[in-house]
Image 1 (cartoon, rainbow, N blue to C red):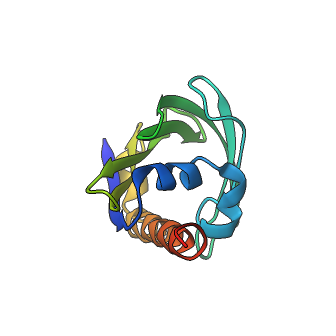
Image 2 (cartoon, helix red, strand yellow):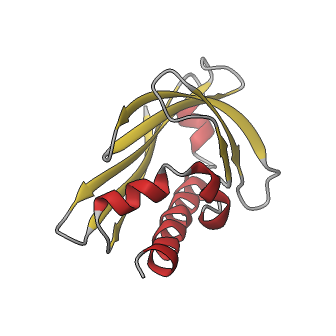
Image 3 (cartoon, rainbow, N blue to C red):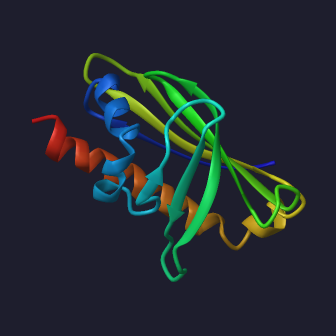
Length: 147
């Protein structure tokens, strides 16, 4: 298994971050990597997402919600080609670090036959993309929500 992990402190309450993070229609306003998510956040539900990385065409992927802990975290599972080759579990996790500080953990765990070799050339791009996603979330919340 391979993991891409990013973290960022967002200077607002955890509940505020959760409301933005789970409001999928807002993704187009702040998320440069996953600008579209359609579907309902519930265990066993299907979400259709669009992924955008620099220099690559947008890709649509059907994902399945694997876990939801309201106010704290959720995870979806998606795959490229077939789950046997590359499958990813994308986790969005929030931890309160004080009255107005939330740690946002944005990580993906990959498995499958090609997860190691396939990730080598993509690892930096994924890491950069997730960091841009974190920054987009923080900037959106600071400019639109916390005032």
